[in-house]
Length: 185
Image (cartoon, rainbow, N blue to C red; front, top):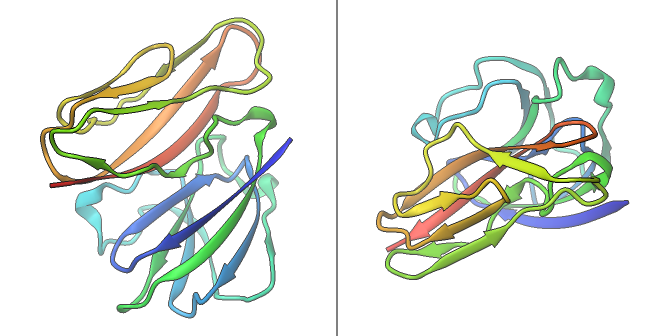
């Protein structure tokens, strides 16, 4: 099963788009300042202007669809990030192979607001049995992630947060996804 998501990416951040094993294709519009990096190291929100520590390649801007080859991945946890140069924004449409991925697919989560309740549920479509969700990242203050895949709470601090979720089903492959969550004041 494939899913498609379109993101508008602003400048000055490494935006997580998903793991290389479940991103099939990209279509970039208005992205002359866009760089794509593959890395097996999570990029911290504090490293906004820092290059990834380990990457396979940089994909130059191309208005044609970019088909990705998962065989190039060093591990199942390798992720695709986008960086927008200067003060422009870029529109990127990502096609995900949802057979072994977390839903919603990795990328940008809906914004949250300090002092307002936030809830987002994650699943692994097609998995049989129970699935346990976890993250080793620091969640926004006031939010928790349940083992059932529910991110909820009331955020108390504004900022941009990156979350790497791991979904471990009772049977089947482990799925990873990287998300970016903006909490506004």
